[in-house]
Length: 316
Image (cartoon, rainbow, N blue to C red; front, side):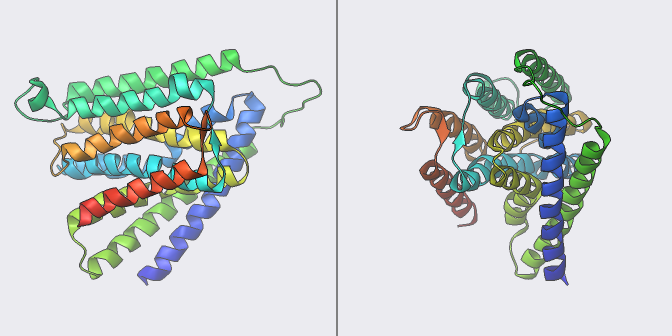
């Protein structure tokens, strides 16, 4: 039964990814919003819904380690596994705005997370934790960054070409986005629940399930939507989805979770948070390698290898 639910969840995820990508692309065309911004906002927040649900429920239930571990694992999966796979399918070009602004924003969020979980090392508190005040500040920062990015992109967007006629109605695209998100979230829950049940039946430790299956399972919407976007040639949307999801995971999801209840890194080590920072640095570094401003296939393979090595470190 769990295997059947696993397959059903995967089918819903793939169908939802197609609908979400097509709907988001139509909205971008209708409103003349760059695809990267749609990926950074609508797609990123939508596909981060599973992480939001898991982390909020975990925080409310006093399971801080699960809430933080879900975000840490999801960000690593997003950057190393998803972008690695996407780059193998098709190299991902990075724009000047990605290099100067978007990826550094993600790196800044990762550094902020590491700083908030290093109170004892920095001498800012007797115990490592993300307090309510810090959570509210993270939420405010996320709102300001999103508004600033949208306004800047709208201001610098090129005018529509002569003779270009965008879709007249917006509601069909909005309906596709809603249906796509529903498929991604419901399918992700089915896949995650069945995968967890299978892992438990095989005797896999609870901590390993939380760090790997929970994080990877809640990131399946990002994986599906990004791969579909790349397959359709919309590499900017795929990159925006991952970068935006990483920022939303830290600032929006952990911010909201900490606002519900202060979070302590139960079982989450400095190695885990350092990996989040290093993965963001690695993404930025790809802009300055042999083929400038492109995440190439060989770099994607290195990302996947690094993720595999991290998982091996966790379960060894």
